[in-house]
Length: 334
Image 1 (cartoon, rainbow, N blue to C red):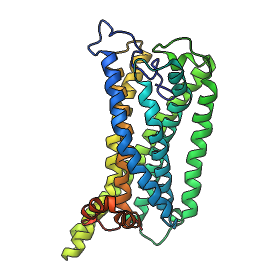
Image 2: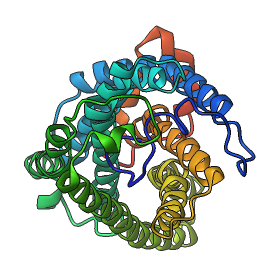
Image 3: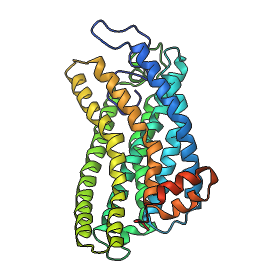
Image 4: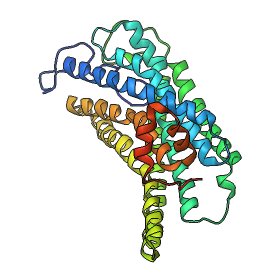
């Protein structure tokens, strides 16, 4: 895969070569299955994210939460636009030029959006922590200006440290399609920098995981205490409603945790020169699972943002979905 995974494999698991003697999985079939999965994801993701982008464009930017939401929508939409090229690269007969383009550009942008989403979910979690656990008025960290600064730093840091250098350094002309196509497009110094980028991305994921774990443990304690202290049915309902804030944690764990866990074991095998094709396939399937965040993130917007729900409700195409989803949800974010 391009860019971040420290791997000798390109967009195809084993390029177009036949299954390895000790490999129980046919790479040709695995490539086609993953290609179909990306194609199936593209249409609903495009529909959902164009709608989310239109709605978020209409939202008034009055808090850091709205800023994070808008940036998350932008990252998801940009990632969605890479899916067709990404899927095409999985076809065993895809042109060499397309695979090289995916290595240098498409895959790099894809991973940029992936890690922007991870960091923004961390920022949203911190925002929810102060909103629920420390509700002492509108703190500086909840102001729109603060959110804009944080969002800008996220994009700038990833662009300058990972994305642009990788695009520049992945510039060699590939001679043929092999499992090392993307890595063969880098010189020795670029490969070493690639290893640094891989480590940096692992640090991002695990740091955000720790932050979110702390935030949601505190939020859970607060919600439980509030529920236990509530006496009226309305108050009980309000405490239950706050549980919807955990949707951020659920999406994060479902989408990103499996990929990074599998990736960690796969990289360990590579360092030990004992690669297992089953782990390689698992890594690519969990990467697809990570991509499903482009369809699951709208649940965050609906569950946590009243203004987003209200504008979604006005769309006739989604009127029924919105009405059935929001009957039991009230705003816990604005």
